[in-house]
Length: 99
Image (cartoon, rainbow, N blue to C red):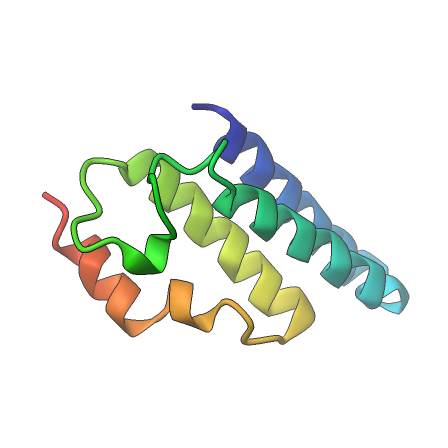
């Protein structure tokens, strides 16, 4: 349960470090990539399959909230769109459908 919150806290801390120490941006990008991969891992994710394969995101707002923080941190620091399919339009529509 709380694994995802710990990961998002790490992502926020690394994002702050990237602002203070921009000369280490490659290291911070790598660390954020590792955090994203862990956040999507089956031991952390509440979903039984890849998040892009899910039609109904269910009542996992806590997980999704922290995942979004992590994805935003990765994009901000790395500038890489590697996880765009997880974070953007279709995924966002699914999140809005959660009630």
